[in-house]
Image (tube, rainbow over all chains, first blue to last red):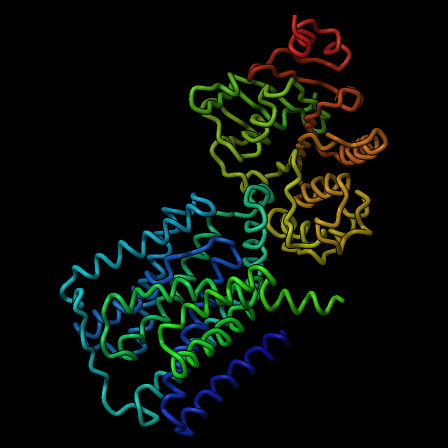
Length: 311
Length: 239
C-alpha cells in the first residue's frame, strides 16, 4: 500500500513538473519536440504490454496509432468533439481493434502473429486512403480550437501528453506487478506449460492486445491537433512500427522502466538529429542503435545494468 | 472399491489421416498408482495431452471426478485438479524456481497465494529443491529440472498427477530418487499416472498398467501379468 502511495506522489509530481514547464513558456520548440518524445513514451509502453510482457511482437503499431488519430478526425469533422472525448474515443476504437485482431490472430504464434499485424496496418491504410470523408489520400486540414491554455496549443498538447504518458506508465506498472503480469510472463516463457499450470492464456493475451491497443489509440488521438494536417502516410508511418519495437528493446522489455528509458533516449536522439543533421536520419539512428543493442545487450539497458550490478 | 477419478471413454484422436488414438478406454481409481506404457509412437503422450487438455479428443469422452471435461480448456482442467509434468521440461525460464511454483499456486491452487507463500517452501523441501529456490532454471541439472516439473505440478494442488517420462535419461540412483518422491506424493492421497520407458520403475511403482500400441489399448493388468502377456511382448519385441 505504501508503495502505491509513493507511485502516486511521483506520478502527480511528474504531471506538475510538466505543467510548470508549460507555464515557463520557454522556446516553443521544446514543447514541440517534447510532445513527440512523450508520445513515444506512450507508444513504447503500450507496445511493451503485448510485445514485452506477453512476448507477442506487434508490427502493426501504425494501425492502432492511426485508428486513434482518424477516430479523432471523424469526431472533429462531425461534431467538433472536445479533446478528452477524442482521446477516450480513439482509445476505445483501437482497443476494439486490438480485441478483434487478438481474437483472429492470437492462435498464430511467433512470426506469424507479427506478419498478420503488419498486414493489418496495410489493410487499414488502404481503407483510409479510399475514405473521402477523412481526407482520403490527399489528407485533411484540422483547425485547432482557439484560445488554448498556456498561450499556444502545442504547449497545451504537451501537458496533455505528459498526463497520458503518466497514465500509460501507471497502467503498465500495475499490470506488470499484478497476477496478470505474472501470468503474461509465464505464457511468454512457455505457453503450453502456462496453460497447463492454470493460466487462462487466451484470455490474458486478449487482455494484453486490448489494453495495448487502447493506449496506442490514446497516443494517436491528439495527433490531428498536433500536426493540423492529417494524411495517411504520416499517420501510418513506418517510424511508429520501428520505434515502438526498438524503444522497449533498447530500454529492456521486462519492466515498465525499459520502454520509458528507450523512448526518452531514442526519441531525444531523433529530435536532435532532425534539427542538427537531417530529418531523414531518424530511422537510420534507430536501426544502428537497435542492431548494436541486439548484439551487445540483448536484454536492453536494464539487462546491462543488472549484469554490471551482479559483478 | 474406490470410485473412478478419471474415466477415458472411447477416445479417438486423429492428425490428418493418421489415427494416433483409436477408441482408447481406461479408468483410473482415486488414490491409484497407474502405469501407462507402450513402444515409441504408441500414443501415450497424445493420450496425456487429451487428458490434460493440451489437445482435444475428436471422439469419445473424458470424465474427471464425475464431471465431463472433454471440451474444457487445459487451464480449467488444471483448476479442477489435473496436473502434469512435461516429458521435455518446460520451465518458465525468466523466473526463479520459487517463482515457477508461484504461477500454478496463484492460478490453480485456489489459494490466491503467490511465490512467497510458505506452501512453496513446503513443496520445494518435499521434493528436495529448497536449496535452489532462488536459481533460474538455466542453472539446474537434468534431475533438478525434472524435480522442478514435478514440484510445479504439485503447486497446482492436483488430485491427479500425470508424470510424463520424468525419469528418462536419469541415472539409476536418480530414478530411485524420483520414484521415492512419487511414492510420497501418492501416500499423501494423490492419484498418479506414470508414463515411463524405464520398466524397472513402472513395474515397481504401478498397481495397475495399461499398454498402448499404435494407438490401441492392447493390455491391462497388474505388473506381473503385464510382463508375461504375449501381446505386450510382441508389441515391444516384434514376432
